[in-house]
Image (cartoon, rainbow, N blue to C red):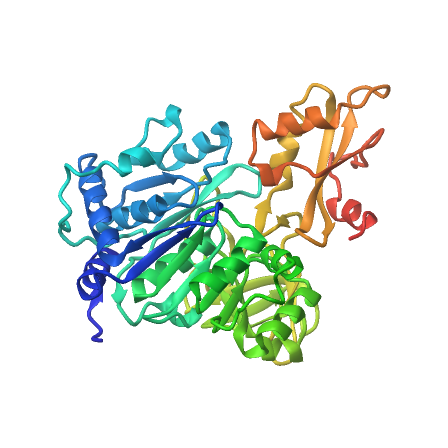
Length: 490
């Protein structure tokens, strides 16, 4: 195929013309059934929605908020936005209204795709009733920025990570697909939520190069193994918690996983024993790990064979230079822990924040997302801690300050500190230390749960509470979360 660049909208039109009746997208449902779209069905549906969105003046530079669970409509909405040159902005449909509204306020989206009545957006039912709109493609438009991913800032306040580059590549030369080894004719299985950067980016990369994609309504270990057997994906992308739950599923050893050519895991540290079990099951040549951030400050990759030689490493830089610096921002020698600063493709990180200050940068465009680690003599990177205080629970990021702010709003909570303690299933589980307002009475755990759930997504709700007479803050009001965490198992 030639090297003429095209947008994802024109690429979809091309693929639909070349293979109209081939399956492009499959949604594996919780009841065991599935929904499917051919390339032509996907093309026509995305075109109809794009025509409707154009009535709202959606176009280059505008944001389209997609507030839906995993469904066919989620992907259709993304591709419709791309056909207009607009920027898709996926946000969790489980997000409490207050947090959701703060996120929406950061971008002022031109349109919202949502079933939430109070948002008065375009619902899934309306997305399935677009017959009055033409199914012909609109004039070509290049998305720039090409995605906006919801996240949390270091203060716990919502933020958007906007990727400012243009989504405009040759069909066989999309850098992310090249990195992942996804090619035309592959089938990707991505069981994670589409509002996460990982599942979103993998899915769009696959579709752009001509691979089909399989999604879940919701992750379930047994159903995911069944989906692999049924749909025969060649590429699987997961987070370590999914790997652990699938590993412990009763059908793991009996499931036919021979279709998998490559497994990618990322988003959180993977326990050594879990990774070894998957390497034993699939073979070292099929298991890959990627370390990166949504901001694309840098990327490292490691194969299973390399990892067996260097257990715990996340690999060497992929078009990425790595510097390990101390607190004074001076380089440290190999094997010494410091903060990880990286530079990808010889330039600054490719992101723009809405709702937060930029990352710290040193030298010429070396940036840090706050991770700690070290490199060995051969340049392989090892992580010591994802961030000083950040909790990664089941692949999702939890900012302690955000949860603490909600807990201390409870009338019976004087002070609160949130830490992540080790958990075999989630990697880390959210644990809250509470100083009650009354020494004679502690708030009920069920009451605290209800209070937090009213304001925050479910994965941020503490899974355990501990009540202390007084939290060990110093005279400046500061507290060492790492010390409290280490006292409870590290």
